[in-house]
Image (cartoon, rainbow, N blue to C red; front, side, top):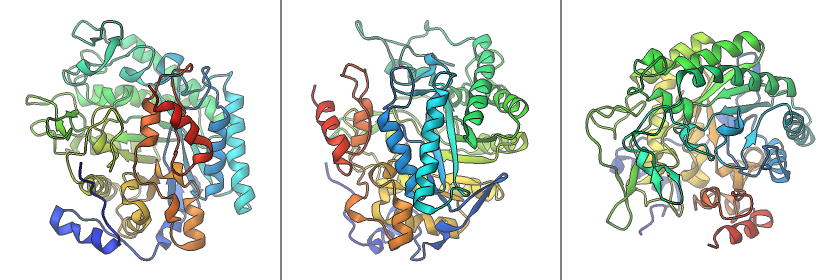
Length: 472
């Protein structure tokens, strides 16, 4: 398959704007990245954010393990002033893999030590941690819970892709039960308990995760669900609203954020032409996708998204992280890539179009909510030019924070590199090889999950794990 990223200069990327019909902007001056940002009562010392990247390296009981702690030490020493802690399940049954972090009374002291090490590493490098902001993402994995799928609504496109019996290959069908309203209502107390523990151990904010088709994200699209949590827009946002309100009441002083899909798109599958992705068959109106045109799922529709963000701001949500897509079903939308993971498809569009989509939708929302700090995503594909793009987006008021996900695994000290040299260490810049995703997908070891990291640029730790993971 022909590759897309053949650029040797930034000018070559900029020349793609008219050809691809996109609007990627760049700045030689990266100083906007180092503007301090107020987030509620907190102050982040720069506009750089490490996204919630799971390492899948906790223990089977949900405790952070050695590689987890190592990762947060590296993040702390790296210089980004907003560190968005990874998805941490509020219940054992809500974990997406057997090594995902879990928050409860038993794991809390270990999460506290992980957080303490992160702050200590930051102080050791920069002398102070007074302008470092670290939060924790709280999640329920819903249909992607690893023990068994826990679905909020039936989706005629996604359901046949979810295997519920490996022996027979049986997938979700119309008879598969939905989580009932009582179960969903009880989750409010579990989120409050998790938020209380997160606050107690020192996290400065919690993220009510509403992205990537996990449970709260699925509810946003649940137009076909009966009862209090489906159908109308008010009902589809009800559970997240109840969680936010309860945390505001029960855990005063804890900042609330959300990482939210603003565009689901439609699931893709490998096509007949060189495994290039193509949309799964669908019929209009498409009723189970959020932020997506019902008549054309290749088009975003931010009408409901803007309404819900406005409501969340009224409820006290102080920070929004913009994402989109589904890592299991529409991976080119969530992470524009050069090389697909082993279970993926070749990109059906030039990845720069996907980068531009991230930037455009974040800019649209930032313009609609100019006082709300918004974290933008989708930067990694730009490789060594990503921070020049981020600086231009901040300069032009298109976003507040530049969020870096997988690129932080290869070069967690990207902020320090920019401060000291004005550019990245090119030899450690993420090339979107998708090794990290491939390792997340690999399950054939005694723990049922391989740790995920960057084998090309963190060889000392992850090369041997990658060698094991790619054997079948």
